[in-house]
Image 1 (tube, rainbow, N blue to C red):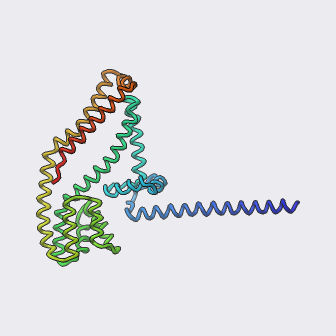
Image 2 (image 1 turned 90 degrees about the horizontal axis):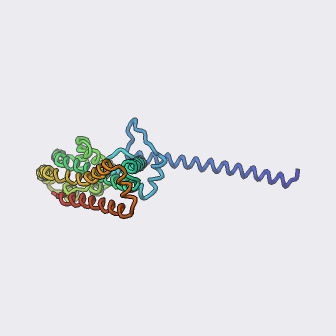
Image 3 (image 1 turned 135 degrees about the horizontal axis):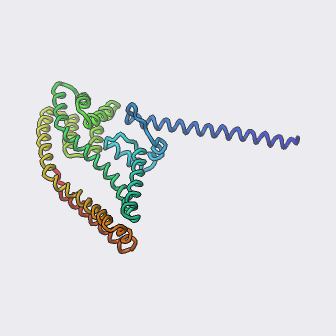
Length: 312
């Protein structure tokens, strides 16, 4: 055999071995990196027993993007036991279902409109969950201030008092205070840890409580008396907020009835005259009229919600 041919075959075999070794090393590195990301993700929010995470690969890829980071931040403030990948997959499935349902029940023109409304509804759902969790946390603030005052009066340090409150209170206050206690345990300051709490659950009551705790920890003073007075104030604000919410319940229901009336009118027209929406949205004028109507109903909903929003 020609020695050049033998040399070429040997070089080819050696190159193939290097390629195989490189592919193996690359795949092993990717697997180790994915395992590390899963382990770091689970360290922030422990995975409950029996809970199987879905869409792991989608979740890993989504967390690298700006959209995934925004979704992760919003989910962290809502307290939902859902990963960004799971939420994104469920959102896409819901949008597709709403798109097909609107296109089949009304007209093909309403499919993209329903899909856009579905995307907006997903973001509104996260905002509603965050507001709901914040309201629950605010309702627990009087009890939180009372526990901190009792623990401080008993001679415990503020860090220890926060640990006691985290064990005594239920979710969401217990969960949030556990996060604060964990950050204090690894060396973060009280001011920094409590400031992150106010960023996750923004409210005037919490800002006042955090300011009282931070000033007392920084400059000293009668923290027990301040917390006692703050407890009474928070109880009064809690009752006032409850009365305002009761008075505005009818206005809130009206805000949600306005778009429901518009959707009901479309379904009624389509039921009385089958194919009417198809013919109406088949022309440019009809499409423009539908979009203007949707815009007006949305404007009415927003205005009613703005007028019924009273900060206490």
